[in-house]
Length: 261
Ligand SMILES: Nc1ncnc2c1ncn2[C@@H]1O[C@H](COP(=O)(O)OP(=O)(O)OP(=O)(O)O)[C@@H](O)[C@H]1O
Ligand SMILES: [Mg+2]
Image (cartoon, rainbow, N blue to C red; front, top):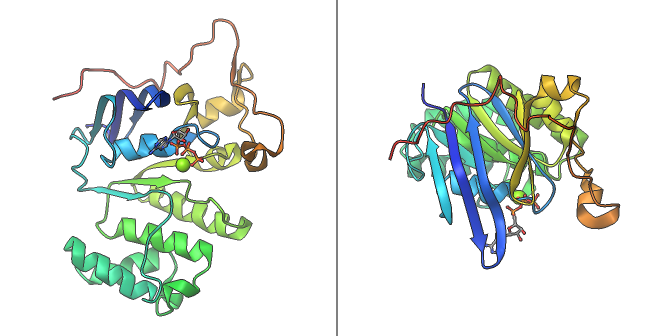
């Protein structure tokens, strides 16, 4: 089966700044893949390139073997949702469903999936941040995607909101959906993901299963807490590799055939 996400030597430069640097990424069907890195590491830029929202400087992207821009079967929430504040959650989704040519019945189904049915008749402006995020995820689910891309879905949420969002992501994974999510929280990807790729300064510096991360003392991954990332503490340490340690897991390294053109 063709991988939901495949990127080869993906690079994005803004003038002299290399935001994403020769990044290889492969997300396998059905896995929850965590893309972990501090602020400014290049997570959102990578996700935008994967979705065809911005053009790479160089490198290749395929989603389900197709060139970026072909997004059927793909739902994405990048850097927070955008909704009409004076419409209800339900009406916002109705507008989106109509625009996307989705059956109106999907609106009730996705509201149920994200557990917003009870508040669906309230105006979006009155929603808590966690509810806004969940409505954003509901919007990504309208077209019943096989792949969901979520950019820091728990960002700014309180512990209860984070727990709700993580439960939702787990349910999506359990239902067979492939999930690619970014985060700057090591605990989050450890809790949620099957596999994690660590990005620092635009480069993928480590990739491993979460099980390997837990049991592998030689691969030290230090993900700075949010406060540190915002410059309130010492700089996060770079991931250390012990001598001879391979950067990637041989058992989980994806095959690297040339991408179809
Ligand atoms: N349109 C742009 N023009 C110039 N530089 C940009 C642009 N978009 C992103 N960058 C730069 O690229 C780098 C990576 O940014 P990106 O938003 O991808 O990081 P991130 O990992 O998503 O960070 P955060 O955790 O804060 O969301 C940053 O240095 C950022 O300033
Ligand atoms: Mg970002």
